Length: 188
Image (tube, rainbow, N blue to C red; front, side):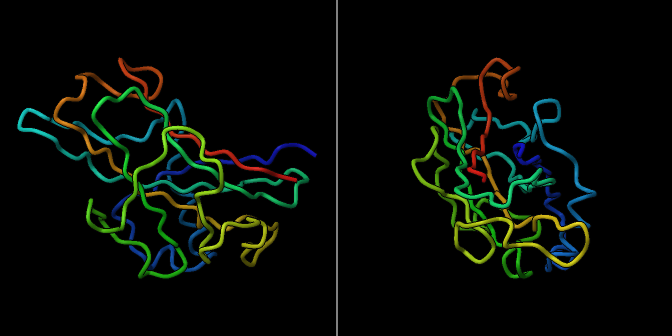
């Protein structure tokens, strides 16, 4: 058994909830979304703190298992960010993509109840399935063949940039500062 193959895809914030309201529509929509990785980072835009603390744009990604590679369980999802910030935090929420009421089109910093994303690996799972229970991703298999993982592991994020932050360009591990998000899981 090999490790499951996984991917991050950027969810365009203009996405209408009707295109991701059920598992099959969501799977088709996510196939057309752009990959997010080291070569194609998630872009939060530019933030000016010349007038004091300011927030970045809100961005969204989904995590999914694209191939289980012999595994039957993907569990215990832990999501965190690493960075070299002094005065800033990454704020995040995990919308449940099971109904149009969970996804907010063109989300803002007040669209969800955001929390500060951990800056080191959490000791326990902090990313939930659509049903609100952190559990086996293989339990979320829509109709179709071959079976695939439902893409309900969604993260909406923005950077709350503090007024005393170090000036620089934060672009993953390639910029003048370090900013990377991470997701770790167990499989069997």
